[in-house]
Amino acid sequence: MQKINILFLVLVCWTLTGYGSEPKDPVKRDTIRATVLYGEEVLFDAVDGLSDGQVSDLRDSILKFHGPNRLWSYINLYLSLKNKSEEELVAYIDSLFETEDVPYALINQINIYLANRPEQVTFATPTDLFVGSKHSRIPATDFYPSWDDSKPNPYPWGLGNQDTSMSLLLSSQELGEFHLPVENVLTSKFGWRDGRMHNGIDIDLEVWDPVVSAFPGVVRVAKYYGGFGRVVVVRHFNGLETVYAHLHRFKVKTGDRVEGGQLVGLGGSSGNSTGSHLHFEVRFKGKAVNPLSFISFEEKILINDTLVLKRTKNGYVSYPKGTVIYTVERGDSLYKIAREYGTTTYKLAELNGIRRNSYLYVGQRLRVI
Image (cartoon, rainbow, N blue to C red; front, side):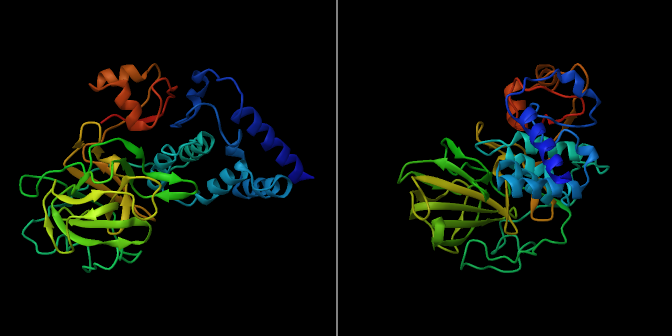
């Protein structure tokens, strides 16, 4: 009987907060400490009063009486995130914003949990800057134990487990400049898709369109490989590796040295592809990082020539050096913040995965640079 009553309570809360409710006065949220909320949807109205055991009971009750519906899925995922670090949760929230149907209720619940947890994340630029050299026969041997041309990702999962944070010099007069692999429309971003991770971005192209290397480096893989189809992997002197998949033709072979902007292949639709496009990945020690965290596809440039990487349990959070986080205060608006930092509301909204007419709440953290 207790489980049924609890189930009824959470379903009522879900119905009232998740669907069809009118937006409330955002000023009422001022008492929530450092909480970023997107709309009014949450999983539970009284999260502070629920233990993990009670939340587990809710999940089990929903499964028993209603089957594995969307609320059950969100609660199950929410419980699985409770043991992750704040950096991992921030990165996960970023990926949720890239999904086709953004789960705002889940995002808000994670943010409420973060706001009531004592740990705070500080985005500090590490001092250990890696500066590679184009004179190396094999790039970035400081980071990689071997040169394996058998498959795109040959590295053991534990590679980099002892890392904390580091920064990479991406481009310079010595290292060479950055180039977009294809100058066209993004059709799919980095993040979760249909229950699994999309480890790169997709760029529209026509068959036979040129695809170029993003940075100078050495071709590690150029072969047909599973769902990637015809794929080229370049290890760069700056420590990153880039992946160019679904190609129609190769224009390089394993062991070739390439410059940034040099042709590596022609676009196509080989492998597991529903139409011609380039699947582009950026990896460090085999772990995928979000290219959009440091590349401006709109301006066709790097946001900064130095990339900061912070190790998490399952990979790396990446952001450009010089990132500034602003904490929203009473009376702020997106326009006011944009004017203060010499940018536009459009760019602020894009940086933070929000709409330009989104409510801002006291304590909300926005990336402004």
